[in-house]
Length: 463
Ligand code: COI
Image 1 (cartoon, rainbow, N blue to C red):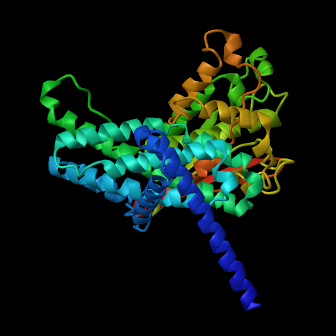
Image 2 (image 1 turned 135 degrees about the horizontal axis):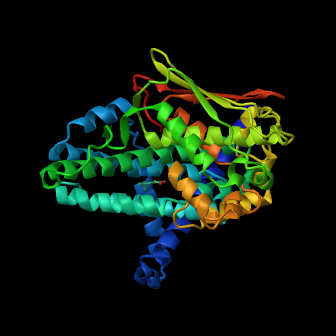
Image 3 (image 1 turned 135 degrees about the vertical axis):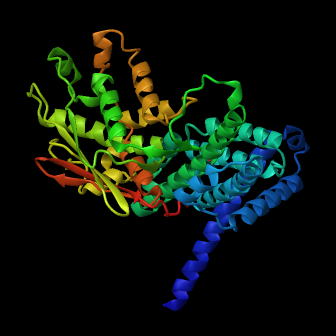
């Protein structure tokens, strides 16, 4: 009856308010205990409730504000003609926008079941966000270039501090997967990741604009400086997908064998080479985009294609080629990676889209011990997950103790997959309005059409 529904809604709201209060109380007490130890010594309940009330009030003020999202085109146009005054305006935009975006996510975390947010890794992420929120709130308006440089320093240190958030979050939520419905879990993680990408893009773009501005102001002092690749902040304005594909294929060719071969011992014995990547279509295409994001996706798709091909052709002395097609339409650029790796169907999943899910109910491999252990080890590294493909390769080489001997090049044992690459690629693809699909031609191979934004760059970024 309507009365029952109302009663149940009231109950739900009370439960969610309780959760929020417990979290805030917990946060208030930890805030008392950590940086403000002298206050904590007062040990007064009144102080704790006042702090709790104050902090929650601040969070609410920020969470009630709408984010001001930008398009790729706006980021480029604004950054193209930089003056000190415009740079200071940009700094103030970032200073006020980041705490709003973080407040929304803190609110989201407060709405999780209590058992999830108190899980060690999730709680760590929550604390990191609270601390960043406090730092941004405390930063005074930026009026001079010197203020901006101080601001860039704070932002840089937060970017570094947050480097291991993704593996921590994925680990914490994988372990809590039983407490959330698959849709709830996936949409929560997607919001967290999209929002994180959006904050890091704003932060890194602003730091890059500041560095470029300083360099351009001093350009007469360094006559030997080589011309940089055309860019505005972190956006490469003449990015060639062909060159990015070639670079990723080459990096994979020289990576440890266990990254691209299911049987690295045989690959080494037979001196097997990785499948070649044949590039066709509109190979001369150039467009404006963030290089690291494009290469992250291409690298992930090629890595999976090579690995699947090596499984599907275990006795082959030459693995079938992988095809990468570039198509430039009026509003859209598309890339398609096609392999002969047998398709995507695995016993653990019932549809290719399950590969993008973080829920154990959709993808049983989420709870594999090897995967959880690898996530734990990456989340406890200060540098976390490497952001660029070059750094990723370096990390694998370090894991294999360097690549100086052929044995080491083979990699030690099986390379553990974190299971983050494909879902992250999907999120990067949709970030500026593109899409990533996985089409399985069962028994033959996989096609991964990847559409890259409206070529006009007018889609609003993230959330
Ligand atoms: C993140 O990496 O999650 C951030 O929020 C970065 C931001 C604090 C600069």
